[in-house]
Length: 112
Image (cartoon, rainbow, N blue to C red; front, side):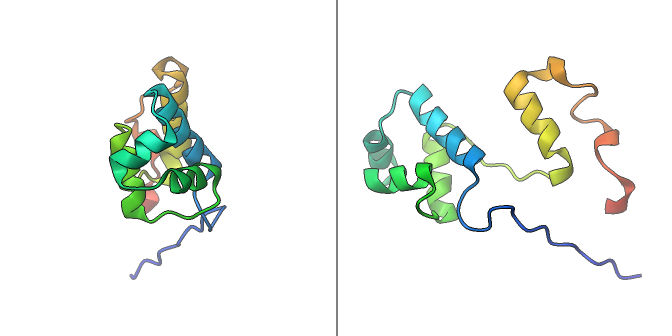
C-alpha cells in the first residue's frame, strides 16, 4: 500500500513568520548587538538585517542560518504536531507541560 504524503503549506508563504522574525530580533537585542554589528558578523548589510526583521525581504536559508548561528541559535525542524508544545516549553518552561516533551502521546500512529 502506497502512502500519500500531504504537504502542509505555510500560513505565510512569502517571508518569515512574525514569531521567527521577533525571535531573531529579540536574540540580537539580548546579545546587545546592533543590526550593523550583526551584519558585520554575518556579511549582511544593516539594511538587509532590518528588512529581514521587519519582513520586507525574504532571506535565503543560508543567510538565515548565518544570522541564527551568529546569535547562538540553531534552526531545528520539528513536526508540526509538536511545534505548539515545543513553543510552550521554550517560552514558559517545562512546568507548564502536562506531559513530558518526549511523550509518545504527542505523536500519532499515522507516521508508521
